[in-house]
Image 1 (cartoon, each protein chain N blue to C red):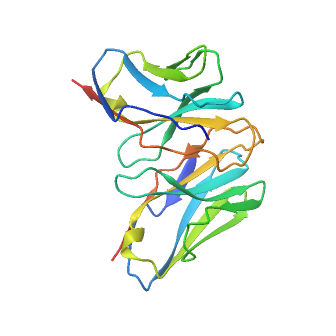
Image 2 (image 1 turned 90 degrees about the vertical axis):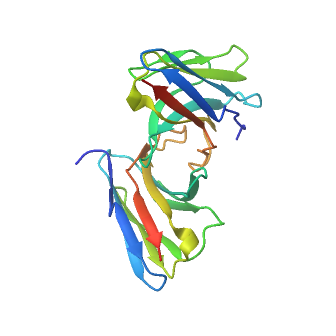
Length: 112
Length: 114
């Protein structure tokens, strides 16, 4: 799996957009970018994933650079309930089901 | 019940006890997973059951024994655990099609070994 690099922590004001960066400079052509989050003491929650086009769903937007070496998860209007650890994961299209490797993630704190 | 459920939510056990964690998924998925999350550490994949096959992390001690009787149920049998096994144990499921698939997690079982 490609290694990802994320900032350890970030703060965001409530109501503002939260932009969480992720570097995956060694990503290969057959790997998707996935984002999950984990609210304290709960199970991780799937947010979004993409290959090379920008993606949007009801939770967030995912912007992937043209060279695919980095991406940004955008929470358009952060709320206090978005405080969580956010994980960026790259994963191949095919292969063993085990290949979903969580790193240390980014602790996002939404401030009132 | 919807999604992925886990029981019990909290468990305290002695090192000589035998207990089991249960996971049930109501999503029609065909792959289930056990993860371990120790304090201030990333999630660690322990076991995968996919298309009725078992895949495991070779670093998991034999005192953890998984069982998957069908595609909706997954158990983790525990015996003679150590205090360092205290952690949050998370179950997940996905629709494994060989092209990945997002995983849906349960709330976890908080295990304390005394």
